[in-house]
Every structure is written in C-alpha cells, then in structure tokens.
Image 1 (cartoon, rainbow, N blue to C red):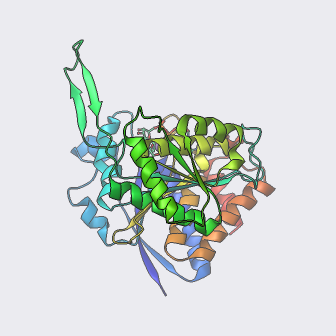
Image 2 (image 1 turned 90 degrees about the horizontal axis):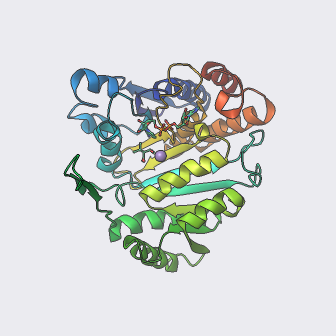
Length: 352
Ligand code: NAD
Ligand code: IPM
Ligand code: MN
C-alpha cells in the first residue's frame, strides 16, 4: 500500500480547530481509496511555543520537513506575538525555503451558499487565483528608521526577478491551457509602480509562448471592482504576491466566506514538499469557541490529495463539500448557520 508522509502543522488559533477535521476527512477517503497517510504532527510550532521558548520552530525546522511528501498547515498568528515575528518565523521560511513559488487559490460559488454579491451564481463562478509566492512586494529589503521622530520612515523595495515572475506566470498559462480558459493578469502598469511594466512584459512574453490561451491584463483596482460586479467573467487570474493576497480574500468573500477558501503553496518541480493551508488566518476573534468553518482546511486537504496523485479521492472530498452545502442546512456562523465546527465536520464525514 502506498504511504505518503505528511507533516501536520496546526499553528495557532482556529488553525488548531480546523486541522483535526481535515485529518478526519483524509483518514476517511484514504481508507476508501486504499492508500495510507502517515502523519508527523508539529503541535509546538506556534506562537505559544514562541512565548515559552522564543522560537516559532526549531533551527532545523525546515530539515525536519524536507523529506515529507506534503505539509498541511492550519494558520499562524496570535495577538500577543507581533505578526512579523510569527510569519517570518514559520510561514514565510517554509514558502521560500521550499521554493513554493505558486500559491494556487481556487474559488467556487457552491450551490446553497448565499453570496453577498448579486452576480455570483453557483456554477458560474469557478476561478483560480495564481499568486506569486516568494518575492515581489513581500521582499526582505527595507526597514524602519528614526522611530518615534517626525522624520520616521518605513521603506520596502519590491523585488521582481525575470526568473521569479516568468516561472509563476508560465505556470498560470499552463493552468489556463489545461482548463481551456482565459487568463487575466493583475497589474498596475500606468508607470507609477515601476515594477509593473516589467511584470507586463514578462506576461506578454509568456503569452507569446501560449498562443492557445486568450489573455488580457487589467489594472488591479479595476479588476477588484469587476470581481465584485461580474465575478463570472474570470477564470485564471495571475497576480503578484500582494495583489494576489488581496484578490484571493476578496474572491473568497464573493464566494460566500473566507472560511471556505483553500490554498496550495506549490513547488512545481517537486524538489521540495509543497504546503497546503486554508487562505484564512488564525482568527483570534472566534478562536476557542469551536465555530470555525473547517471547509477551507478540508478543501486544502483535497488539493493535497490531488498533488499526491489521488485525483479520485480529492474529487470525493470536493463533491462532499458541494453536496453538503447544496442538500443540507448545516452551516457554521460565517455561512449564516449555527453549527459548530464539530457538527459541520460530522455532516461532511457522513457523505464520505
Ligand atoms: P483572519 O483570516 O484570521 O480573519 C479575518 C476574519 O475572517 C475574522 O473575522 C475571522 O473570524 C473570519 N474567519 C477567518 N477564517 C474563518 C473560518 N474558518 N471560519 C469562520 N470565520 C473565519 O485574518 P486576520 O484577522 O487578518 O488575521 C488574524 C491573524 O492570522 C494574524 O495574526 C495574521 O497575521 C494571521 N494570518 C495567518 C495566515 C496564515 O497562517 N496563512 C493567513 C492570514 C492571517
Ligand atoms: C495569506 C496570509 C499571509 C500572506 C500573511 C499572514 C503573511 O495573508 O496566506 O494569505 O500575506 O501571504
Ligand atoms: Mn492573505
């Protein structure tokens, strides 16, 4: 029997509440499809351990993950720990250290989910945000000077490299070709932001290599507005690190709740393990109440199964999510219901 070695990193807040449901779903489908998942759980890689021991993960953290087939992460972040500490201490080193340069974020409006947006109809909104995940606006170059003085300033250099942009844009074109769909590049090319004309040139060059894919570029501000007004017009959206971050939360909300949205941080060459995690964060405002929506984590687990070569098992999970939403009223509060995480999880397990 094939065994895949999975690292589970629950993290903080609702990260620790949504990973157990994902694991239960994985156990159910792996049993049915005849493969085995062997887990190593890193419970103490978190803000709690930072507060106790001064580190989000051990110095050899990446080495402990390196030989795993995939990583499933909950969320990182706690009100008592500055975000730059928790994020640069765990999440970002994994994304960068393992060259997970594609952040794939599918969005669907499921039947039975009320979107706050009039034009967001089930079946019609089915898009993927392909977010650059290792450079761009999230650079390590910059800092703050003159703290507290009138001359105080903060600077950050956005770094876009030919290799870094080309590899993710090429991936997005390939995905659009596979889906038989269009590609939209999110830009801000009116020359004010210096990096974006470079981004546009590289997108055009990739486009020339994919004559089969119809593509366009849109200014990210206009794109954000159209994503609300006409979400069904989008298929694959490729965007820089920061633009992709914002657009993916927006698209998730258009689809009903940020609690549903999944993400795959992919190292397409498979030199390193890829990481799967919900789009949402640790949600301190609802943490500990047992009401977090587990679907983002469960769908992320399905993306992981797909990555591991288990397309049928992954399809079973996404079908169960769709059936649950279409045929029952069981919902967590973010979707307008009163169900707990536990109750929602039980309902989805019944469908598997
Ligand atoms: P957030 O995603 O944690 O929360 C935003 C809002 O969405 C909150 O009102 C929250 O209650 C709600 N929400 C999020 N997920 C939900 C779910 N599954 N079910 C129901 N409601 C849900 O974003 P934030 O408030 O900006 O960040 C909180 C912390 O999480 C910060 O420390 C931040 O740095 C961190 N964060 C981590 C990640 C990650 O680990 N990948 C991602 C985003 C934010
Ligand atoms: C996400 C999060 C992270 C990001 C933060 C927490 C650094 O918002 O995964 O979308 O911006 O990448
Ligand atoms: Mn985000």
